[in-house]
Image (cartoon, rainbow, N blue to C red):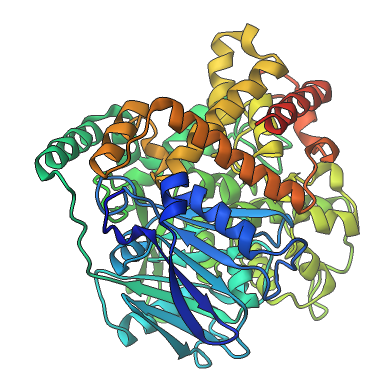
Length: 590
């Protein structure tokens, strides 16, 4: 790495003692590059075995990589923690300005330890950390309001990131998220609940450092090459034009689009909430993460008339993408685009992970249909009967999920795995290792990947992509082949996430491009080195999961995925179990 690169500096913050210090960890960044690789090593050291995910012993690790602020698309911050939803590794990636702000503040990683006795927010301004009283912010349910107040209160506009929680994080909903720059999120696995357990309402980070490369001419030429490949790439143009919402129509036609809690594999009214339809009628803006020329973040314009003045409208910008349309559109059979945008705005306000929330409400709707929760779904004597497509009732249920006014909503706030263990209905609870299902019923590879994934994300190993490739070559769909393809892809993704490159750009940053960009920054690595490092990082993550009780051989397979046909037909339990077994063997040999 560059000799004076501040990336090697790790900032430690102890909320219990209200103290902070830095350590030079050049060794970690040289051995594991940055991002996920550095973060998992810090987490192993700082998180004691069997720590309570909502206790002071559970640290939060943020990490960025050497390409952040230097090359396009290295715009993600990696967060690692022990997940309150699964009880093992929590990993979540977010864009916005977070990565650039941390890098320009002079840090490669931030470790937050302990817990505050009173509400607090942190202001990290280059060499200083300020512990600010957040008593006046605590109790504000809206993440929008929290962000707006801190924006006006603190310096650094344009260069800073503001990560914050809404009401769901304060109430420690197991799948509460952390919002950054309003439209980006550390979404999955409950980082918002960990913030809430520490009484940490928000973190603002800003910095103005510059990074000097050793050979500016070579750097400029390579930067131009990467930039041009990005803006001229058909794959990246897809993300710019319609975003991931473009996937609704093809997955619906493929009969791989989970609908009505996966009772169905397609939605007969998907056309009204497709990426094309929403863009045509509601698209208001495209915005981008810092240092990204793609602008894949799509914001719809939602107009709502004021009750007393019918020709005056409140206009709201609402972010949307494929997973959001899946989880609150097709899973709940909401076909009204206005209703969909209205409910997405509510979820954003409270700070809930959209995928988990949508799957939880889908399970709750079916559980009510089957009379598994005859009265405990009611609040203060008022019945709240969830019905497919009824977005106004779902909006009320989201408020209850956050406030948890009775035992039923307290259980649902811990995820569908826990709720179904208490009320029944585990056979249609779409939980994979404790985490709710992402929006792909493409075949066995997607589900095997969710079950064994290092962070149980659809972005682990990209099983949905393997399923679609295997449709063209059915002979490759053996459990053993699927397992090998998943693990091979996951190894490479550890390199990309250690560089904190957006996975949308995985076609731009092939292995040769990664080696060239690292060379400009002083890393002398070979292809074999990257292969070895990717395997080591994946092994470290798997070992942390095992240490905290994860056992893929004992994992529960949701029966619903074996009942509803996929594009590969009905998936057999035997195929899933053999695939999980093969993948586990490969993980144990890393």
